[in-house]
Length: 478
Image (cartoon, rainbow, N blue to C red; front, side, top):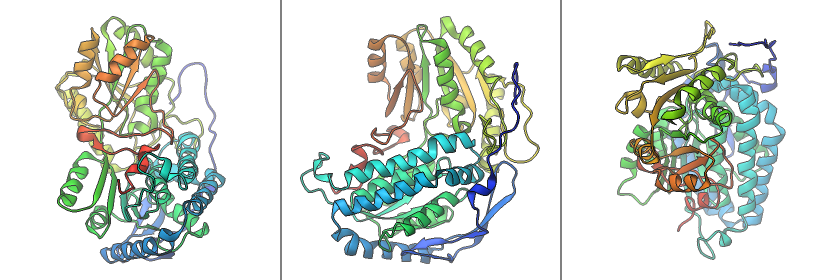
């Protein structure tokens, strides 16, 4: 999709850079092997063509992986000093950076996100997390959790499909830095970069069993949760998070959950309008809106609502929807047919409940899973599109008159993951931030992440923090 005076010639990144293999195996106890589950095809969401065959784990593989992780924890990994552990993390970080172009192409093929996002955000931030926590490995006594904090043991980690490699880094880097071992399960629709990360880990010569990577569906995730692990870390939907919380209730397992969100992006009448429009676009259309902290509810002060919406519509007319490997693409493919069906269902409900739907002129590809950037106005607070997480490129616009009304509307949600505030008044930023029930509040920006900064929510957005010094606490016996 293009509009205006400029037309963009295709600028495709080469698919060959991904070095796709015909098949991928699970990684257990330092070895790649076929899983005891089914062999499945992972597909490219942009054209529905198969990418590779993936051998999925069975319950017996989960048991083997947990035993291997336990042996590694009780053996060489536990006996190793922090500085030596840090060297392994530095090796992993350097390898991710060196293979960044390959990993970015592979991520875009498997996930559907634009290559410029994989290249400029996902892969560099994944490497940065390993670099950051490598530095903590020999300084745990200075993290504020006692002079000699101890690791928990074996961590079972289940990650989602929206940021496959980055979520793996968020989970593995602090766990390893703190001295734990891990059993990691990537999402069934996006296993490839996690399995390539397993190759990097093998090449880094980590002791066998320190990291195990199991491809598989929800049953394998549940088996990891139920296994003999000391810690469960999950990122995904609130519904699944509740099931996991019930599973570990009454056990000694530590648990962190990073779940859904319905973030309010609040724009006051004194905000820098052009900057706010860019922040709104980044907040909801980054990664096709498939972001737990996406700014999916725009709360705009009534006096500037018409002006802001007009500017936003002009900006959306310049977004380019297209093949993820085209460097000009702004909005790529939806990750799966199931997710596309959910987006369509909720959008239909928004229209049925009386909201006004608008999308820029957009010619979508014939094959693959695609949804045009969409804005709803005249949205009721009680509408499903204002209350439920859509996890797609869909923005609901509401208005407010006073800061108190903005707070009331922003907090009228069961979630509590993130929020944004746009204003030139520093005092208003501080006042709003202190009253918003959100784990992360951005001021005059949105979707900014850094490995040194903690991230997480509360209410139905989960509990615990990932990133920063706080991210270590989840993997220490404190």
